[in-house]
Image (cartoon, rainbow over all chains, first blue to last red; front, top):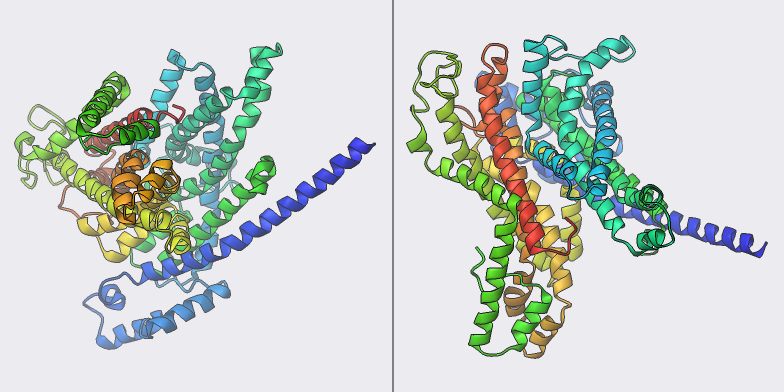
Length: 331
Length: 306
C-alpha cells in the first residue's frame, strides 16, 4: 500500500514537472517565432531596387507602378511596413497573392493535402525502411551486412533527390511505362490512381532520409549496446535476443523517435523540389512558382507557414522527449 | 592541413604538451602525434576513398579548360547521343554536355568552398562571441534558433529569389542558411574548452582573453568545426544544385550542374543523358565529402561512436 501511494505521488510529481517543462518550452518558443517573423520580413526586403518595378517590368506605366507599390504596401516607411506585417500576422492574414487572385492562406491550405500526403507517405517509408536497416547494421556490426547497409545509406545521402526523381521518371514512366511521370490524383477520388501518382515522388523524397535514419539508428543502438545495464542484462543470463530487443532497442528508440519528429519537417522542405519535379499541385510547388513569378506575398506566406510548422514540430518533439525520457524534465 | 602547431590533440596530450617546457620536447610530441594522426588517416579506407573522390573533383574543376574537348558555348548537332566525339552527348542547343559538366564542377565547388569559408569565419566569430566572451549569447542563439527554424533549402531559395539569380547571391543565401549550425557547434565546444584546466592555467599566467581564445580555445575546438564544415560543403553542393535547378542559382548560360539538369528535364524522354551525367557528378562529389566528413570525425574525435 505504501509503495503504491509513494509511486502515485511520484507520478503526480513527475507529471507536474512535465507540465512545467511544457510550459517553459512553450514560452521559449515565443521569441523564436518572433525572430522567425522578423527574418521573413527581412528576407522579403532583400530585393535590390524596386520590387514593383521588377514585377511590372518595362511595359508598366509609372502610374501602374505607383499603384502596385501602394497595393504591396511598399510605399510606406519600413517601420510602418513592419508593424503592418505583425498586425496582419496576428489576424492570421498572410496577404493576397499578386497573381492567383486568392489569399495566400487559402492557396496554401488548398494545397496542403497534397504536400502532407507526400510527406506522410515518405515518413512511413523512411521509418519502415530506415530503422530496421539501422538496427540490423548495429547488431551485425562490422559484418558485410553492416558495410552494405551503411554504404548504401551514405550513397543515399549523397544522391540529389530531384535528380533521382528525374531518373525514376525516365526509368518507370518513359522507358517502362509502369507509372505516371507526374500529376496528382486525390486519395478520395481514386485510391489506386492516387497510389500510382505518389509512389515515385515518395521514393525520391525518402531515399536520402532513409540513409539518414539508418545511420542515426545504428549509432544510437551501438551507443546503448555499450551501456552498463546491457552488460548486466547479459550477465544475468538473458539471451542475446531479449537483451537486444527488450533492453537495447527501447532505450535506443528515444533519440530516434525525436529525430523522426524532425524528419517530417525535413520532408516538408524536400517536398518543395520533389513537387516541382513531379508536377504535384502541392504547397511546395506553390512556393516555387511564387519564386519564379515573383509573387512576393506567396513566398513570404510560404516561408512563414513552413517555419511555424517547423517550430511546432520542434516543440512537439521536445515534449515527446521529455515524456519518454524523464531525465530531461529535471534539467 | 595538420601542420599547424595547434591542432586538436586531445586534452591529455595538450596538458602534457603544456607541462613539458622547451622547444625540443614540444617538437617531439607534435611529431609523434602528427605521424599518429597520419597513420590513423591512412588506415581509414573510407576516408581515403572520400579523399580520392573529392580531390579528383577538385582537379577536374581546376583543369576543366584542359580536359574539355569542346568550348562550352560552341553549338554542334542538337541532342546528339553520347559518343567518342561527345562523351556525354549534346544538349538541345547542341552544346557538349561533357564540357559543361566539367565547367559545372568549377561553379559548384567554387560556390561550395566560398560557403564553407564564409560559414567558417562568421560561424567561428559568432560562436566565440557567444560561447567564450558570453556577450550577446542569448540574442545570438535566439537568432540562430530562428534561422534554423526554416527548412534550409527553402530559406536559401527565398533569400536567393529575393536577391536575384547569380553566383554571389547563391553564396550569400547558402552562407546565411549554414552559418547558424556552424556557430552553434563552435559555441558548444568553446563552452567546454573554456572550463578546462589549461585555460585556467593560462589565465593564471596572465594571458589575455584574446590570446587564450586564439591560442588555446579555438585550436582545441577545431575538430568538430572541421567535421561540420566538411558536411556544410556537401550540403552546400546539394543545395546549390537545387537552387540552380529551380532557377535561383547562377543563371544560364553559366553551366552549373543544377541548371543543366533543369534543361535535361525538358528532354528527359528523348535525351536523358543531359540530366544523367551532372547528377552523377553531384552524387560523386557529395559522396566524397560525406566520406571525408565521416573519416575526419572518426579520426579527430574518437569519443564519438562510429
